[in-house]
Structures are given as structure tokens and as C-alpha cells.
Length: 406
Ligand SMILES: NC(=O)c1ccc[n+]([C@@H]2O[C@H](COP(=O)([O-])OP(=O)(O)OC[C@H]3O[C@@H](n4cnc5c(N)ncnc54)[C@H](O)[C@@H]3O)[C@@H](O)[C@H]2O)c1
Image 1 (cartoon, rainbow, N blue to C red):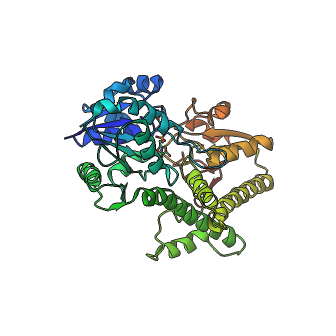
Image 2: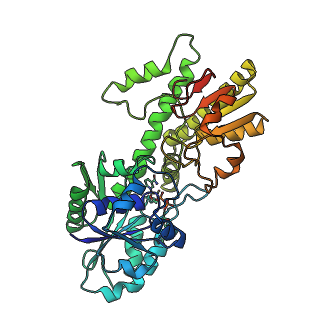
Image 3: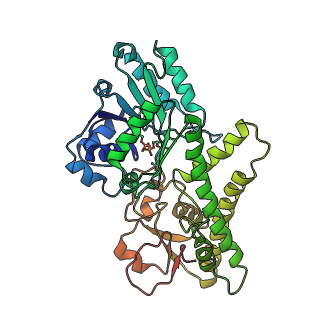
């Protein structure tokens, strides 16, 4: 089996590397952060993610280092580095270019040794053809003749990364070449359960990745709109309405449940990037994606108002936010509703505690609320609980507002 290199051992990269290794590939991981490598050596992972540490402890075929030269004997290299959102919401490719700059310094010496770069990071449409030009310009090499470049993003949810990676609904491959496609298909056939291979051009795959996530935010926003509508009718229940609509196969029940706004490090930014894409290609209007962004903001305001009203009406004095992360089984709080709620309470001078079993003290968003962190056994000391993602809580008589059953 071919040796695989994985560049970037973060939330997605480490899981991908471990899954390839588990399927029998010799995997060489590389991360340019000494801290990341140190933690992996200590069998630690900065964010809570199920199964990762178990895999890490058992996996013998996964090697990793901070030495760039270690990846040079792998002919297929998965690039899974961050592509942070810029102020205008497009993704920055600076970390991908930084990798390509390093890599191309070694390329000429690799003649007669065709390599295959697989971009897994989420990029703006049109990026991969620029990467190809960049490699060609810095080396004497030509795409297809001397190297391949494919786009192969993952559709995983944090909190379920390993299982989602191994059991994807679809595998998406954007490529310029049949041989390169076959190489990736073979790796995935050996690694994942899905047979749903979607093979297309680089540009189509780049659009597919952000369009799919944007479409999911549309579904979530629509379900939440049902909630805001049904609250205006005495006997209407959004949960029942959404369940019925979701039973129609043309809709499907997944991600179609009224409750929380969409959040986390992927959905909001992918939708915003998809919105921005329409601006740069000068489409006249961006009605749909703009509406999704505004509808999500409106939903956050709706929940905030409702919660403040309930607290005032019932004269609650000490509130427990159960769940600061943006969903279950993760420590990530980026753009989470729990975080918005903590900010809201702080602004309004409301006394509150936070129960979050995966609280990460190092996380830049969580750490400012560290002093509010409480233990599970102390939940009983509060007079109202807001359960942000249907956590199973200790039995007590304290009133609970479960935002997924609102
Ligand atoms: N995490 C997710 O849920 C998810 C899902 C789908 C897609 N993605 C995409 O995958 C990409 C990576 O996301 P992530 O969440 O794993 O990011 P992350 O920040 O958790 O990890 C990225 C890792 O890359 C390393 N790195 C940065 N520049 C490097 C370089 N030049 N060489 C080697 N290592 C380098 C960093 O040190 C870090 O460890 C992003 O484009 C993201 O949008 C992430």
C-alpha cells in the first residue's frame, strides 16, 4: 500500500491520518506547530473529540513529526491546513501557499517521481487552478505530466469526526486526471464504507463543498422559521410541523429540527463564503444566502428575547447554562448559542453558571467564562436551567428550558 502524507494535524487532519492508518496505510503526519506535535506525542488532543485518543494510543502505522523532510518520500500528500475566513468572508489560502512554497523547494529534485497533492482544506472556488499555476511557476514541472492536484474536502461534523470520516454519505473528488482520481478512489475504497463517489472537475468540487454546507444552513434556518411562526399560534407546534415536512423524501428529516441557530466553525463561515462568492462573480443579487444569514441572526434575537422575557416573568435569579459548546461531544464553542447566551447574561447583569463537560480552558472563546464554570453536581444550586443541546442532566425539580424542545 502506498505511503500517505497528511499535512496539518488539527481537528480534521489528525482524524483523517488516523483513519487512513487504521485501514492499513503507512501514514506520515506533519504539522508545523511544535506544540501540536508535542501533544500528539503525549497522546493528547487539544479539543475534545470522541475516539481520537483511543485511535492514537493503538495506531502503529501513524508516524508524525515537525520535520518537513519526513513527508518527501510519500507520493500522495493530503493538505488539511486552516483556511481562515477574512473580514470579507472569503477563505484565506495563506497556509496552503506556505505549504506549497516549502514543498516546491524540493520538487525539482523529485523528477521522475510523480507526486499527487490532495487539497482537503475548504477553499474558495477557483483556488485549485491557482495552486496548480503556482507549482508550475515555481518549478519546471507540469500538471498531469509531472504531478497531480486534486480537491477532496470532507463532510464531517465535529463531535463525530472519526465516524463521519469512515461512514460518509458521499466522497467528493475534484480532479483533472483519471489516474489521480483512481488513486483517490482506491484509497477511499480501502478506508470508508461509502460507495457514493462523486467525481467532477476541480471547480465543481470547490463549489459543491460550500454549496452543500450553505444548503444545510438553509434547511436549519427554515426549520427555525417554523418555530418563530408557530409561536404566534396558540396551538401550533413547530416540532410536529417540521417532522411532517421532513417525512417527505424530497426534504428529509436531517438537520430539519427547530431549535438552535446554526453555529460552530464551519456552517456559518461556509455560508458567508458562498454568499461572498456571488459578489465576486458579480451575480446581481444574493437573496438566498443573505436571507439565511439574516434569518439566523433573527433567530438568535428571537431566542434571546424569549429567554429574557421568561427570566423576568418568573423572577429567576440564578441561571445555569447547560452546554457552552456549539453541540454535543465537542469542546468547540465558536459562534455557539451557549456563548451568545453567556454574553447576553453578562451584558444584562444576570447571575449565571455554565455547565460544560468538555470545557476547554485554552479555547479563546471559552476561557473568558472560566469563572462561571460549575460542576455537574452543582447544577442543583440554580433556579433555572437552559439546556442548549439536550444534555442528559441530573434529575431534579428545577425548571428546564430545552432549546431543542422549545
Ligand atoms: N474541523 C472541521 O469540522 C472541518 C470540517 C470540514 C472541513 N474543514 C476544513 O479543514 C481545514 C482544516 O480545519 P481544522 O479544523 O482541522 O483546522 P485546525 O486549525 O484544527 O488544524 C490545522 C492544523 O494545520 C497546522 N498547520 C497550519 N499551517 C501549516 C503548514 N503550513 N504546514 C503544516 N501544518 C500547518 C496547524 O498547526 C494545525 O494543527 C480547514 O480548511 C477547514 O475549513 C474542517
